[in-house]
Length: 170
Image 1 (cartoon, rainbow, N blue to C red):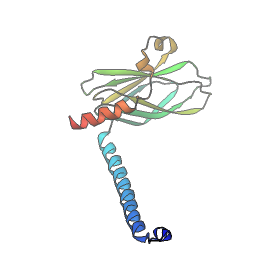
Image 2: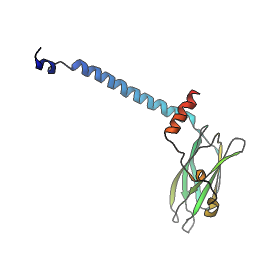
Image 3: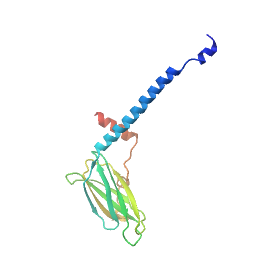
Image 4: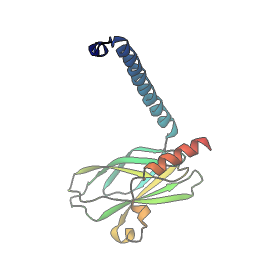
């Protein structure tokens, strides 16, 4: 067999097999993305009970949802005063269906000019949360907070993923 016969081999059947595998991979990828999205949507339930005890600044909650182990609160903060806001915090208290305090989170408002609006997003890791209460607090009250209470987004990483997989199978 001459040397050039190896390089002139007809590779079209291999390309057909490769394209079939590629299409199967793309189909599986799209299917798994859709299923993961639907699964995540089924885990989180909206929190209908929330209480905002803040007059200035104006606080709105656009999304408050929780699952069995964590949740999110999203909304806006609007300075409706004639003064610049600074060194103020929001205190979020999370409660179970039986009104037991699950935990507290603090969110720094930052500096807000009069009429300025700012979006916020707060993640929490508390079990079985059904309601949230929002209050304005000063910097002195936040000085007593623990580092966990000041963390606004839950830590996600390899430990969380492995824990989630073990939670599914156990």
